[in-house]
Amino acid sequence: MPTKRIGADLNRNTSKSRSLRNRRSERTEEQIQQQNTDARVRMAQLRQEESEDTRAERNEYEPDIEYYAHSKVVIGAMDKECPHCHALKSKNEPAGVCCASGKVQLLEIETPSEPLN
Image 1: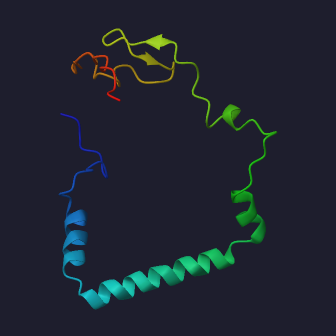
Image 2 (image 1 turned 180 degrees about the vertical axis):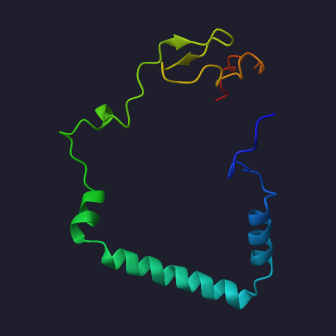
């Protein structure tokens, strides 16, 4: 049997998540309010430290830039078909991710009736 990877336990019952849950449940209302206030102050400081140029850049849209062609955005054409469910996928999409390699059977979607006016 393969060894368990460290840090691969992603469920809600890890000792770290239980500890965090317990700490949060034991907080008083005053502690919660203080932590919220501290978080608001930290966020205000971060916003103040952000340069005006960075803030302006965030809200600017340049119509001349082809954002859709950026390498982080392009996933390719959806021209590969799943042999199990016939869903269209891109070439880099893992096999069987759409229907668990045929283990999931979805019902056909019926055409909705005409809306009532």
